[in-house]
Amino acid sequence: MGALDQIRRGEVAVRGLSKSFALGGGQLQVLRGLDLVIEPGECLAVVGASGSGKTTLLRMLAGLETPDAGEVRIDGVHSLGVGTERAVIYQEPRLLPWLTVLGNVAFGLEARGLSGPAVQERARAAIRLVGLQDFEGAFPRQLSGGMAQRAGIARALAVRPEILLLDEPLGALDAMTRIALQEELARIWQEERVTMILVTHDLEEAIVLADRVLVLPREKGSRPRLIDIALPRPRDRSEPGFVALRRQLMAELGFH
Image 1: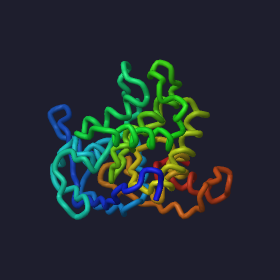
Image 2: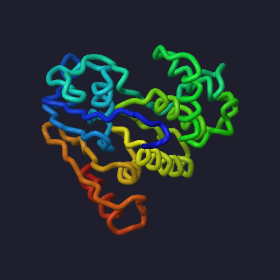
Image 3: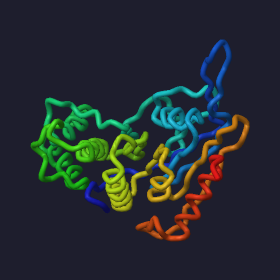
């Protein structure tokens, strides 16, 4: 067990998932008949060109978007709308500026109806997990971009989600901070083993973090591909197998 014990484990399954949007008097289909099972405790990365449906898929998994056809099942149960078993981390941490780091992380727990000493205990455990224990009393304006994103991750983990959904969580950070937080996310995932689904444009990030990568195709009508990432952890970006997987993902996306 990790620092946040009793985190639930969750299987995510999508069956025949399809979604279109109105565009110029017609319909733009971004996903069609997607079938996918994400195992409990797995880390799945989702990559693809802009408009391939990455964020749409994540929003449907979060219950923020309704599919045109198909279904999302959590632990075998048809999921409709948002649920407390899921937490979402966005590109921006969306911290409340008038609350400290501890206040922001505790706020996520209080918003779910929790109160009393357990709230502070769980908030502090999450803050320690992301390495911000020396900044509990800091306000968002006093944090660097990487520290603010760590606080956002702590807020999501504190509610002990079964499934953690990440939408380009490190995309707004500078290159060095992004690499550091990729390593932190890998450590946190290994320690807590929460089911994690990550949308990213960064192919190295996908390989560093994921057990499998779902490649959504650029061409409509093509089928998505699942790529296994069978590399030992922690992952060495200079290792030939890592480089070969990056080259394979680039080819899948139409780059040579």
